[in-house]
Image 1 (cartoon, rainbow, N blue to C red):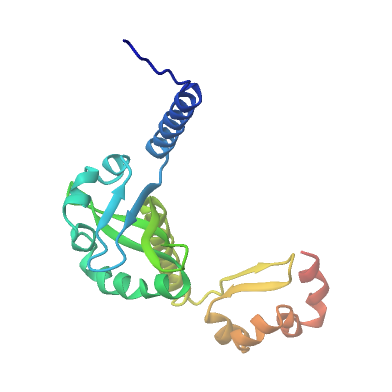
Image 2 (cartoon, one colour):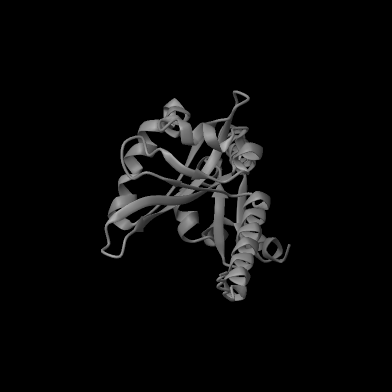
Length: 216
């Protein structure tokens, strides 16, 4: 006697296919995104439990290098940033979210600035389960900021040593943006007074010249 049972599994197969497609889309998005997605433990060295594949392009490491060594992340933070970064993690457990910027050692031996944003994953009872976050390389932005700061420092060094008065103002909002110290020597007025009242210098102009100067 041959007995057979048949069952319609079309819906299950369709669900499996849809799930597979969702996973493929998600994998594609994570691979093409500039952000590295990760999850990590909530204690110890905060060892990674997941790292997206694009970590290889970003920092030169395979995801397994993070996963196989629980102390990998901490060990590769720049020594000058490490204590601050670990101390700032307390906000994650107090507020449920965390944002920081620090240098991380790339596999080629160079350091890259990373913007780290994380949230605390919890279970249905509110107990912490894992850290879920993303990394974005912001090295170019940091270098641009450093260049700007150095340029501003050079400008101030020059402006504060010459005898000529250098100033910058925004007439649209009637605000003095910068006035060099020479203003106090040349005009006999404090820089603070000009910042507070941008048009106060007019009082020092000779009455016969005032109208012409303001017209110019």
